[in-house]
Image (cartoon, rainbow, N blue to C red; front, side, top):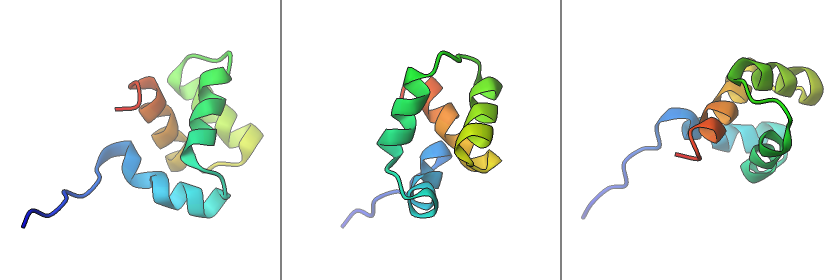
Length: 70
């Protein structure tokens, strides 16, 4: 019997992001992808100011998106 290893890295924030903000992670990743911004901290600041995300949640989404979803 093999146990599934715990989710690590930015994706470990995804369940709490979906619960807190009421949108699936795929929506947030789509927003990031469609944004004209490309720098990590610009995207984090944008998610915080325009969409009300906390820093940790915004940072996790941007890190995941910029890493190609890995």
